Image 1 (cartoon, rainbow, N blue to C red):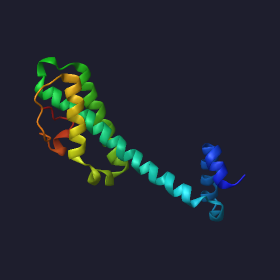
Image 2 (cartoon, rainbow, N blue to C red):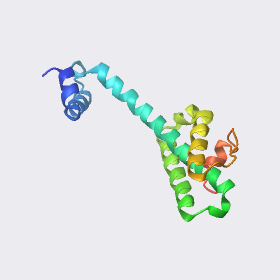
Image 3 (cartoon, rainbow, N blue to C red):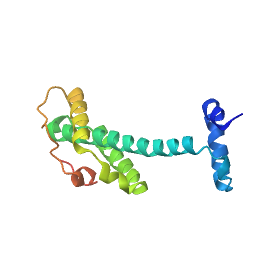
Image 4 (tube, helix red, strand yellow):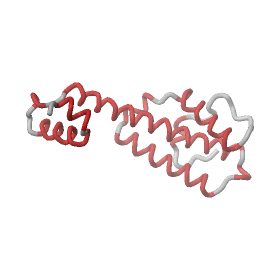
Length: 140
């Protein structure tokens, strides 16, 4: 079975064989094009996860700020969990921090907060600095 066919028909086996070939220095057996695509996909996946977690975190900070009377322990738990997971992502891949698109992330967060909280007047631009968002002690 060709390497391309293996990639298309049994990804797990392809990944195991590719990793083995790389570890053993058998570079001629490596499906370089698909290996490169998979490595790039890992980076994109981490980037998407970071933005998704930031959007959830910011949405909860918005709700905390604008609906403090409705704040629940689950909101605080979500804030803490997202911060911990974001910290781990950034510890594993510090270069992701420079790629954060706060405008895009805030638009998603604001839309999410509106869906959950109703038609409140959330600001059009993010009222929190990134350092505040990531600060374990900060609550608006």
